[in-house]
Amino acid sequence: MKVATTITTMVLTLALAGCGDASPGHDDETGHAKKEAGHERSESGTEHGDHNEEAGSKVSLTSEQSALLNLKTDKVPGGRADQTIQVPASAHFNADRIAHVGPLLSGRVEKVVADLGDRVEPGDPLAVLSSPRLGQVKARYLRKQAEFEAAAADLRRQSRLAKQNIVSQADLLDTRALYRGARAERNAAKAALRAMGLTAEQIAALDQNDDLSRYVLTSPLAGVVEERDLAPGQILSTEQTPIMVVDASSLWVFGQVYEKNADLVAVGQPARFDTVDAAVDGKIDWVASRLDRETRTLKVRALIDNSSHNIKAGQYGDLTITRQVADPVPLVPVDAVQTINGQTHVFVPGDKDDEYRAQEVQTGEEANGLIEIKSGLQIGASVVTSGAFDLKSALTASGRSAAHGH
Image 1 (cartoon, rainbow, N blue to C red):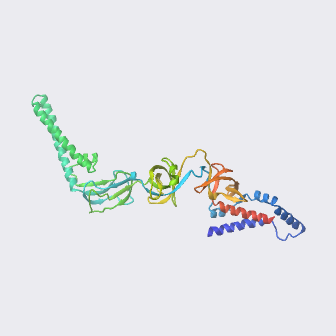
Image 2 (cartoon, rainbow, N blue to C red):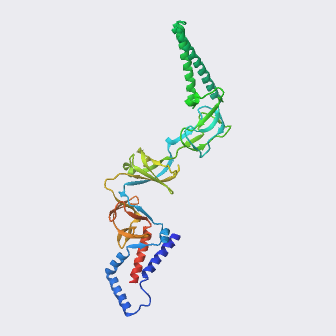
Image 3 (cartoon, one colour):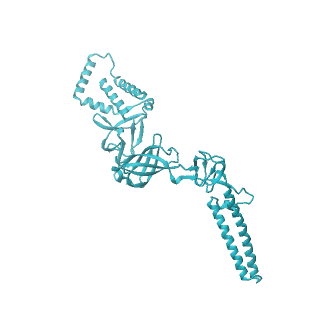
């Protein structure tokens, strides 16, 4: 209501400004003659009309008026009206950037290290558990490691003695067999620890004096803790994944392309996801091979760059898909084109600040809220894309005021 009132006030102001040349009280013969001559030109519709079209092609606003009108000027892109396909879509976490973290063996939660919203890096601890089973496996590994080291030392000693013919080759073969068996059992115990999530560095750092039952859940990727469903004292099983770490710097956007446009979409096409508050760019990286039986739409997926984190998973919006065309022409929003004196125009910035000029154009095909410009405007030129109707109202009001003044 405030903007509408402001526009009305502005229009009246321009109208009064246009009427300002006709001073009241000039009812002499000269003024009367001018009035009659102006009346004759108005009836002919030629000279008076040409004068208005030339003088009324520009609108000058104050900075306050420009701010209240909320005008928007953009560069004119090139393309075709049907080059873009806009479909409803929704954002989702990128499944390749999600980690559902849980224990590989049952245990009791001793401490929760990472809370919701915490930023973690690969290998950072998320929670500390106590697992008797892990303690048993660690103890077995340490025992087998000691047996392997003893067997290796025995083999080295027997090899030296065999070279001196102090022991027989049969004894050496027996010692070598014992060594190989100890090595296999040590490796099997190590593999069991690896299967429980321990890294080679952690296994190498095991010490018999450590708390062998201590088990640390770590993050496999860099991201933010998005889910946390555990607390100290809780027993976790191997089927549970109570922590989810998410890297939301890229998202998946799923859209539904209408059947009539199904053959126009392809992997690799640029795409933009628009919500109420943000817009992000990406590319189509998957197109379904069949239409949905119920909705008769084709499901597509775009991978978008969300490094600014302006888009949240679960948000709805519009997915605009752009296909390549061989002969692009200037494209403007439909609302940017206004009809003035029976001709189509757009508004472009004038020579001064807060000045706009009506530029006559010829239009072509219209689709997806865009209209092609056949002549009168070049790709890359600046044009008013929001607020053109308000400028037209101001321009026509100014024209009427000028006509009244004559």
